Length: 367
Image 1 (cartoon, rainbow, N blue to C red):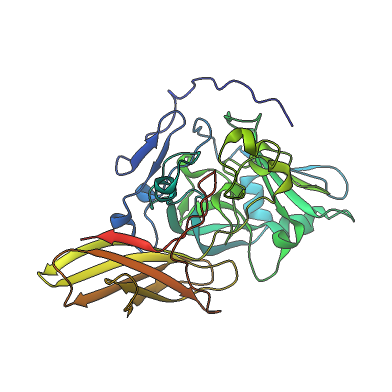
Image 2 (cartoon, one colour):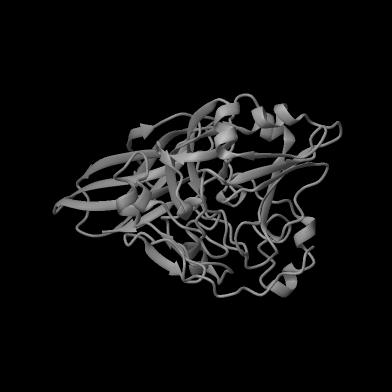
Protein backbone atom coordinates (compact mmCIF):
# COMPACT_ATOMS: atom_id res chain seq x y z
CA UNK A 1 0.00 0.00 0.00
CA UNK A 2 1.54 3.36 -0.97
CA UNK A 3 2.29 5.71 1.91
CA UNK A 4 -0.23 8.59 1.90
CA UNK A 5 1.33 11.96 1.13
CA UNK A 6 0.43 15.08 3.11
CA UNK A 7 -2.43 17.04 1.59
CA UNK A 8 -1.16 20.39 0.31
CA UNK A 9 -3.64 23.23 0.52
CA UNK A 10 -3.82 23.79 -3.24
CA UNK A 11 -7.45 24.76 -3.54
CA UNK A 12 -7.19 28.36 -4.71
CA UNK A 13 -7.38 27.55 -8.44
CA UNK A 14 -10.54 25.44 -8.35
CA UNK A 15 -13.34 26.31 -10.78
CA UNK A 16 -16.42 28.02 -9.27
CA UNK A 17 -18.71 25.70 -7.34
CA UNK A 18 -22.49 25.75 -7.56
CA UNK A 19 -24.03 28.16 -5.07
CA UNK A 20 -27.21 26.06 -4.88
CA UNK A 21 -25.55 23.14 -3.11
CA UNK A 22 -25.39 22.63 0.65
CA UNK A 23 -21.71 22.61 1.58
CA UNK A 24 -20.76 19.71 3.86
CA UNK A 25 -16.99 20.07 3.67
CA UNK A 26 -14.30 22.53 2.59
CA UNK A 27 -10.87 21.57 1.24
CA UNK A 28 -11.80 19.14 -0.19
CA UNK A 29 -15.06 20.64 -1.39
CA UNK A 30 -18.02 18.36 -0.65
CA UNK A 31 -21.59 19.49 -1.20
CA UNK A 32 -25.04 18.11 -1.95
CA UNK A 33 -28.30 19.35 -3.43
CA UNK A 34 -31.45 20.04 -1.43
CA UNK A 35 -33.57 16.94 -1.94
CA UNK A 36 -36.66 19.07 -2.53
CA UNK A 37 -34.91 20.56 -5.58
CA UNK A 38 -33.59 17.24 -6.87
CA UNK A 39 -37.03 15.63 -7.20
CA UNK A 40 -38.21 18.42 -9.51
CA UNK A 41 -36.09 17.13 -12.41
CA UNK A 42 -35.95 13.80 -14.26
CA UNK A 43 -32.35 14.49 -15.24
CA UNK A 44 -30.34 16.38 -12.65
CA UNK A 45 -29.17 19.82 -13.83
CA UNK A 46 -25.46 20.57 -13.63
CA UNK A 47 -25.76 22.94 -10.67
CA UNK A 48 -27.65 20.33 -8.61
CA UNK A 49 -25.19 17.48 -9.17
CA UNK A 50 -23.44 16.77 -5.90
CA UNK A 51 -19.70 17.16 -5.43
CA UNK A 52 -17.68 14.44 -3.68
CA UNK A 53 -13.95 15.09 -3.62
CA UNK A 54 -10.89 13.61 -1.95
CA UNK A 55 -8.65 16.44 -3.10
CA UNK A 56 -8.65 19.67 -5.10
CA UNK A 57 -10.64 20.01 -8.33
CA UNK A 58 -8.43 20.69 -11.35
CA UNK A 59 -9.29 21.73 -14.90
CA UNK A 60 -7.73 20.09 -17.97
CA UNK A 61 -7.73 20.67 -21.70
CA UNK A 62 -9.98 18.09 -23.38
CA UNK A 63 -7.98 18.22 -26.63
CA UNK A 64 -4.73 17.10 -24.98
CA UNK A 65 -5.96 15.05 -22.00
CA UNK A 66 -5.26 11.34 -22.41
CA UNK A 67 -5.86 7.98 -20.79
CA UNK A 68 -3.24 5.23 -20.72
CA UNK A 69 -4.31 1.57 -20.96
CA UNK A 70 -1.92 -1.02 -19.54
CA UNK A 71 -2.03 -4.79 -19.29
CA UNK A 72 -3.38 -5.45 -22.74
CA UNK A 73 -1.77 -7.53 -25.46
CA UNK A 74 1.38 -5.73 -26.61
CA UNK A 75 2.49 -2.27 -25.56
CA UNK A 76 0.54 0.07 -23.36
CA UNK A 77 -1.69 2.42 -25.31
CA UNK A 78 -2.28 6.12 -24.75
CA UNK A 79 -5.42 7.69 -26.23
CA UNK A 80 -6.51 11.31 -26.19
CA UNK A 81 -10.19 12.15 -25.94
CA UNK A 82 -10.35 13.16 -29.62
CA UNK A 83 -8.84 9.75 -30.42
CA UNK A 84 -11.40 7.99 -28.24
CA UNK A 85 -14.18 9.80 -30.06
CA UNK A 86 -12.82 9.04 -33.53
CA UNK A 87 -11.88 5.40 -32.84
CA UNK A 88 -14.93 4.17 -30.94
CA UNK A 89 -18.70 4.61 -31.12
CA UNK A 90 -20.13 7.17 -28.73
CA UNK A 91 -23.11 5.82 -26.75
CA UNK A 92 -25.35 7.13 -23.97
CA UNK A 93 -26.73 5.64 -20.78
CA UNK A 94 -29.03 7.14 -18.16
CA UNK A 95 -27.79 6.18 -14.70
CA UNK A 96 -28.04 7.46 -11.16
CA UNK A 97 -24.73 8.39 -9.57
CA UNK A 98 -24.98 7.95 -5.80
CA UNK A 99 -22.48 8.35 -3.00
CA UNK A 100 -22.17 5.39 -0.64
CA UNK A 101 -22.69 7.80 2.26
CA UNK A 102 -26.05 9.11 1.07
CA UNK A 103 -28.28 9.53 4.18
CA UNK A 104 -25.25 9.11 6.48
CA UNK A 105 -26.60 11.68 8.93
CA UNK A 106 -29.62 9.45 9.52
CA UNK A 107 -27.37 6.52 10.36
CA UNK A 108 -25.25 8.81 12.52
CA UNK A 109 -28.33 9.67 14.56
CA UNK A 110 -28.42 6.00 15.62
CA UNK A 111 -24.76 5.95 16.64
CA UNK A 112 -21.74 8.06 15.56
CA UNK A 113 -20.21 7.14 12.20
CA UNK A 114 -17.02 8.07 10.32
CA UNK A 115 -17.29 10.21 7.21
CA UNK A 116 -18.64 13.40 5.67
CA UNK A 117 -22.06 14.23 7.09
CA UNK A 118 -24.54 13.76 4.25
CA UNK A 119 -28.28 14.17 4.09
CA UNK A 120 -30.23 12.59 1.20
CA UNK A 121 -29.01 14.77 -1.68
CA UNK A 122 -25.80 12.93 -2.59
CA UNK A 123 -27.32 11.52 -5.75
CA UNK A 124 -27.77 12.68 -9.35
CA UNK A 125 -29.57 11.12 -12.28
CA UNK A 126 -27.85 12.00 -15.56
CA UNK A 127 -27.49 11.03 -19.19
CA UNK A 128 -23.87 10.04 -19.62
CA UNK A 129 -22.15 9.99 -23.00
CA UNK A 130 -18.89 8.27 -23.85
CA UNK A 131 -17.32 5.17 -25.33
CA UNK A 132 -17.82 1.64 -24.07
CA UNK A 133 -15.01 0.32 -21.90
CA UNK A 134 -15.44 -3.12 -23.46
CA UNK A 135 -14.80 -1.65 -26.93
CA UNK A 136 -11.55 -0.12 -25.70
CA UNK A 137 -10.50 -3.37 -24.03
CA UNK A 138 -11.31 -5.33 -27.19
CA UNK A 139 -9.11 -2.89 -29.06
CA UNK A 140 -6.09 -3.42 -26.80
CA UNK A 141 -6.69 -7.15 -26.25
CA UNK A 142 -7.03 -9.01 -22.97
CA UNK A 143 -4.24 -11.23 -21.72
CA UNK A 144 -5.38 -14.66 -20.43
CA UNK A 145 -5.71 -14.85 -16.66
CA UNK A 146 -6.65 -11.24 -16.07
CA UNK A 147 -9.86 -10.81 -14.07
CA UNK A 148 -9.98 -7.18 -12.93
CA UNK A 149 -9.86 -3.75 -14.50
CA UNK A 150 -8.23 -1.10 -12.32
CA UNK A 151 -8.80 2.63 -12.74
CA UNK A 152 -6.71 5.49 -11.44
CA UNK A 153 -6.44 9.24 -11.42
CA UNK A 154 -3.01 10.71 -10.85
CA UNK A 155 -4.21 14.00 -12.27
CA UNK A 156 -4.95 15.66 -8.94
CA UNK A 157 -3.91 15.31 -5.33
CA UNK A 158 -5.57 12.81 -3.00
CA UNK A 159 -6.15 12.77 0.77
CA UNK A 160 -5.40 9.16 1.68
CA UNK A 161 -3.16 7.77 -1.05
CA UNK A 162 -0.82 8.83 -3.83
CA UNK A 163 -3.70 8.65 -6.31
CA UNK A 164 -7.41 7.87 -6.37
CA UNK A 165 -8.16 4.36 -7.58
CA UNK A 166 -10.77 1.64 -7.82
CA UNK A 167 -11.48 -1.52 -9.78
CA UNK A 168 -14.28 -3.70 -11.06
CA UNK A 169 -14.23 -7.26 -12.32
CA UNK A 170 -13.43 -7.88 -15.96
CA UNK A 171 -16.76 -9.66 -16.25
CA UNK A 172 -18.63 -6.53 -15.16
CA UNK A 173 -16.47 -4.32 -17.36
CA UNK A 174 -17.30 -6.31 -20.49
CA UNK A 175 -20.89 -7.40 -19.81
CA UNK A 176 -22.86 -6.92 -23.01
CA UNK A 177 -26.16 -5.86 -21.44
CA UNK A 178 -24.64 -3.12 -19.23
CA UNK A 179 -22.46 -0.42 -20.70
CA UNK A 180 -19.54 0.75 -18.58
CA UNK A 181 -18.41 4.02 -20.13
CA UNK A 182 -15.37 6.21 -20.41
CA UNK A 183 -17.56 9.29 -20.27
CA UNK A 184 -16.87 12.78 -21.57
CA UNK A 185 -20.46 14.08 -21.64
CA UNK A 186 -23.14 14.65 -19.01
CA UNK A 187 -26.69 15.57 -20.06
CA UNK A 188 -25.51 16.16 -23.65
CA UNK A 189 -22.88 18.69 -22.60
CA UNK A 190 -19.11 18.29 -22.19
CA UNK A 191 -18.28 16.88 -18.78
CA UNK A 192 -17.05 19.69 -16.54
CA UNK A 193 -14.05 19.52 -14.24
CA UNK A 194 -16.35 19.76 -11.21
CA UNK A 195 -17.77 16.34 -12.09
CA UNK A 196 -14.64 14.59 -13.31
CA UNK A 197 -14.15 16.07 -16.74
CA UNK A 198 -12.77 15.80 -19.20
CA UNK A 199 -12.98 12.01 -18.63
CA UNK A 200 -14.53 9.86 -15.93
CA UNK A 201 -15.64 6.29 -15.48
CA UNK A 202 -19.36 5.50 -15.41
CA UNK A 203 -20.39 2.13 -13.94
CA UNK A 204 -24.20 1.96 -14.01
CA UNK A 205 -25.59 0.41 -10.84
CA UNK A 206 -22.37 0.80 -8.85
CA UNK A 207 -21.73 3.32 -6.09
CA UNK A 208 -20.00 6.57 -6.96
CA UNK A 209 -16.69 5.54 -5.37
CA UNK A 210 -16.07 3.27 -8.38
CA UNK A 211 -16.81 6.04 -10.92
CA UNK A 212 -13.28 7.44 -10.98
CA UNK A 213 -13.10 11.12 -11.93
CA UNK A 214 -10.28 12.66 -14.02
CA UNK A 215 -9.54 9.15 -15.24
CA UNK A 216 -6.04 8.88 -16.71
CA UNK A 217 -4.96 5.25 -16.19
CA UNK A 218 -6.59 1.87 -16.85
CA UNK A 219 -4.80 -1.36 -15.95
CA UNK A 220 -6.12 -4.83 -16.80
CA UNK A 221 -4.87 -7.02 -13.97
CA UNK A 222 -5.10 -10.29 -12.11
CA UNK A 223 -5.94 -8.43 -8.90
CA UNK A 224 -8.14 -5.68 -7.52
CA UNK A 225 -6.80 -2.16 -7.27
CA UNK A 226 -4.45 -1.84 -4.27
CA UNK A 227 -5.68 1.71 -3.69
CA UNK A 228 -6.85 2.88 -0.26
CA UNK A 229 -10.40 3.52 -1.51
CA UNK A 230 -10.70 -0.04 -2.79
CA UNK A 231 -9.01 -1.86 0.06
CA UNK A 232 -9.52 0.22 3.23
CA UNK A 233 -12.63 2.28 2.63
CA UNK A 234 -16.14 1.90 1.21
CA UNK A 235 -16.68 -1.43 2.91
CA UNK A 236 -19.49 -2.54 5.21
CA UNK A 237 -18.04 -3.84 8.45
CA UNK A 238 -20.13 -5.68 11.08
CA UNK A 239 -22.16 -3.44 13.41
CA UNK A 240 -20.06 -4.73 16.32
CA UNK A 241 -17.09 -2.76 14.95
CA UNK A 242 -17.43 0.71 16.46
CA UNK A 243 -13.98 2.33 16.21
CA UNK A 244 -11.21 2.83 13.68
CA UNK A 245 -8.87 0.84 15.91
CA UNK A 246 -11.22 -2.15 15.84
CA UNK A 247 -11.63 -1.79 12.08
CA UNK A 248 -7.93 -1.70 11.23
CA UNK A 249 -7.37 -5.45 11.11
CA UNK A 250 -10.72 -6.17 9.46
CA UNK A 251 -10.55 -4.10 6.28
CA UNK A 252 -8.78 -6.85 4.26
CA UNK A 253 -11.33 -9.45 5.36
CA UNK A 254 -14.40 -7.80 3.88
CA UNK A 255 -15.27 -7.25 0.21
CA UNK A 256 -15.32 -3.84 -1.37
CA UNK A 257 -18.75 -2.36 -1.99
CA UNK A 258 -20.15 -2.46 -5.50
CA UNK A 259 -23.88 -1.76 -5.61
CA UNK A 260 -26.07 0.11 -3.14
CA UNK A 261 -29.34 -1.31 -1.80
CA UNK A 262 -32.95 -0.61 -2.74
CA UNK A 263 -33.85 2.77 -1.30
CA UNK A 264 -36.42 5.56 -1.32
CA UNK A 265 -36.47 9.07 0.07
CA UNK A 266 -39.10 11.76 0.61
CA UNK A 267 -38.04 14.91 -1.19
CA UNK A 268 -40.81 17.37 -0.39
CA UNK A 269 -44.07 17.52 1.55
CA UNK A 270 -46.59 20.27 0.79
CA UNK A 271 -49.65 20.85 2.93
CA UNK A 272 -52.39 21.51 0.35
CA UNK A 273 -55.12 21.87 2.99
CA UNK A 274 -55.48 21.30 6.72
CA UNK A 275 -55.95 17.57 6.03
CA UNK A 276 -54.23 17.01 2.65
CA UNK A 277 -50.62 16.48 1.60
CA UNK A 278 -48.78 16.43 -1.73
CA UNK A 279 -45.59 14.39 -1.47
CA UNK A 280 -42.71 13.84 -3.92
CA UNK A 281 -39.61 11.70 -3.68
CA UNK A 282 -37.11 9.44 -5.39
CA UNK A 283 -36.22 5.76 -5.24
CA UNK A 284 -33.21 3.82 -6.50
CA UNK A 285 -33.09 0.21 -7.71
CA UNK A 286 -31.67 -2.79 -5.91
CA UNK A 287 -28.63 -4.55 -7.41
CA UNK A 288 -30.89 -7.16 -9.03
CA UNK A 289 -34.09 -5.40 -10.14
CA UNK A 290 -35.67 -2.04 -10.83
CA UNK A 291 -38.11 -0.22 -8.60
CA UNK A 292 -41.65 -1.48 -9.22
CA UNK A 293 -43.61 0.24 -6.46
CA UNK A 294 -43.36 3.03 -3.90
CA UNK A 295 -45.73 3.34 -0.93
CA UNK A 296 -46.23 5.88 1.83
CA UNK A 297 -47.79 5.67 5.28
CA UNK A 298 -48.94 8.26 7.80
CA UNK A 299 -49.77 5.81 10.58
CA UNK A 300 -46.42 4.10 11.11
CA UNK A 301 -46.99 1.29 8.61
CA UNK A 302 -50.47 0.11 9.50
CA UNK A 303 -51.87 1.48 6.23
CA UNK A 304 -49.92 2.00 3.01
CA UNK A 305 -50.86 4.18 0.04
CA UNK A 306 -49.44 3.61 -3.44
CA UNK A 307 -47.50 6.48 -4.95
CA UNK A 308 -47.62 7.27 -8.66
CA UNK A 309 -44.34 6.69 -10.49
CA UNK A 310 -43.73 9.74 -12.69
CA UNK A 311 -40.31 8.92 -14.14
CA UNK A 312 -38.11 5.89 -14.75
CA UNK A 313 -35.76 5.55 -17.71
CA UNK A 314 -34.04 2.24 -18.26
CA UNK A 315 -32.47 -0.15 -15.79
CA UNK A 316 -30.17 2.25 -13.98
CA UNK A 317 -32.05 5.51 -13.62
CA UNK A 318 -33.65 6.62 -10.41
CA UNK A 319 -37.43 6.53 -10.02
CA UNK A 320 -39.40 9.68 -9.24
CA UNK A 321 -42.76 9.39 -7.53
CA UNK A 322 -45.56 11.52 -6.12
CA UNK A 323 -48.76 11.01 -4.12
CA UNK A 324 -51.73 13.03 -2.88
CA UNK A 325 -52.91 12.12 0.61
CA UNK A 326 -56.25 13.14 2.09
CA UNK A 327 -57.72 12.87 5.58
CA UNK A 328 -54.35 13.14 7.30
CA UNK A 329 -53.80 14.61 10.79
CA UNK A 330 -52.76 18.25 11.03
CA UNK A 331 -49.22 17.10 11.85
CA UNK A 332 -47.36 13.83 11.93
CA UNK A 333 -44.61 11.66 10.48
CA UNK A 334 -44.64 10.31 6.94
CA UNK A 335 -42.68 7.25 5.82
CA UNK A 336 -42.00 5.78 2.37
CA UNK A 337 -40.73 2.42 1.16
CA UNK A 338 -39.86 0.94 -2.23
CA UNK A 339 -40.41 -2.55 -3.63
CA UNK A 340 -38.44 -3.90 -6.59
CA UNK A 341 -39.59 -6.12 -9.45
CA UNK A 342 -38.40 -9.23 -7.59
CA UNK A 343 -40.57 -8.42 -4.59
CA UNK A 344 -37.75 -7.19 -2.34
CA UNK A 345 -39.04 -4.52 0.06
CA UNK A 346 -37.02 -1.68 1.55
CA UNK A 347 -36.47 -2.45 5.25
CA UNK A 348 -37.88 -0.31 8.03
CA UNK A 349 -34.50 0.05 9.75
CA UNK A 350 -31.11 0.55 8.16
CA UNK A 351 -28.19 -1.51 9.48
CA UNK A 352 -25.57 0.58 11.28
CA UNK A 353 -21.92 0.37 10.25
CA UNK A 354 -18.85 2.40 11.17
CA UNK A 355 -18.44 4.10 7.79
CA UNK A 356 -22.10 5.12 7.64
CA UNK A 357 -22.65 3.67 4.18
CA UNK A 358 -25.60 2.05 2.40
CA UNK A 359 -28.27 3.39 4.75
CA UNK A 360 -31.70 2.40 3.42
CA UNK A 361 -34.25 2.48 6.22
CA UNK A 362 -37.69 3.82 5.31
CA UNK A 363 -37.61 7.40 4.09
CA UNK A 364 -39.06 9.80 6.65
CA UNK A 365 -40.38 13.35 6.84
CA UNK A 366 -42.50 15.31 9.29
CA UNK A 367 -45.22 17.78 8.42
